[in-house]
Length: 64
Image (cartoon, rainbow, N blue to C red; front, side, top):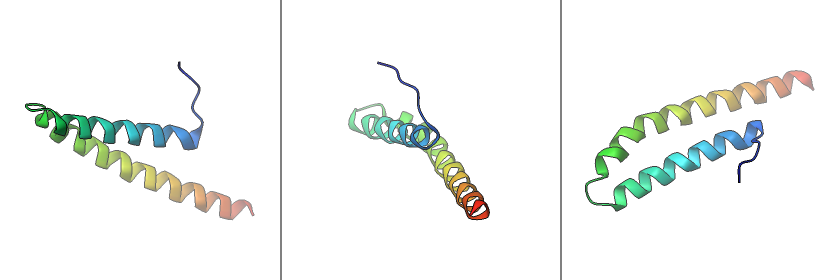
């Protein structure tokens, strides 16, 4: 069943989905090419998530 994702949960869900797809692609013969295709997007998502988290921490520091 679908549900609304909050800000912090959204990134976790997307990262977990990427990891799951990469893992499944590596498990099935002939599907390794999909894991190779997904990995750059996964790395990009990790970098963006780290940037956003750093900005949120900085913002929280300014509000205190």
